[in-house]
Length: 161
Image (cartoon, rainbow, N blue to C red; front, side, top):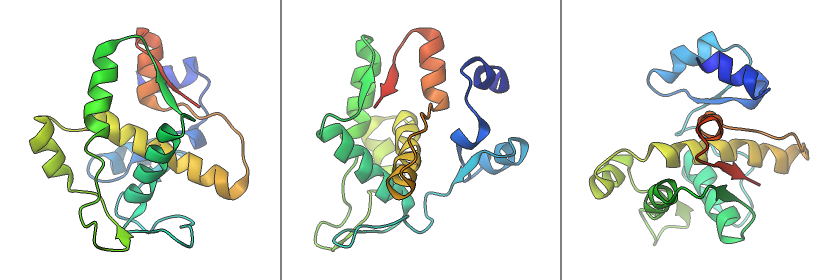
């Protein structure tokens, strides 16, 4: 199913990112050429004035920045999708505001507040990996996440930049 969607949407493997933690490592092994996302790995290209605890935090703040600047939005009329994403985005919080190093609150805490796992948020955060790569390389290749492919095929929307 996954490979067929990738082909249907003409997504080359280097434009796919997979959460390498947990079972994602096995999926990554089967999809040669796809990128692996390790949430607790070292941040990429941190700006001089901002330091991040890990890659996931850096990507989450990049996501927040693009959304706040109206440079990225969820293209859907499905209010359920919009509400779910808004609820999850509201959980992007710094766990230690007194520290100069930014770090996200734990996913377990997000789960407690939401009553579910913030899976869509994880997808959008991982998608920011490519935004950070573009900042460094100047690459302008369009990237579509698996969640977006599912939404496009179901008519529920797409993250647009």
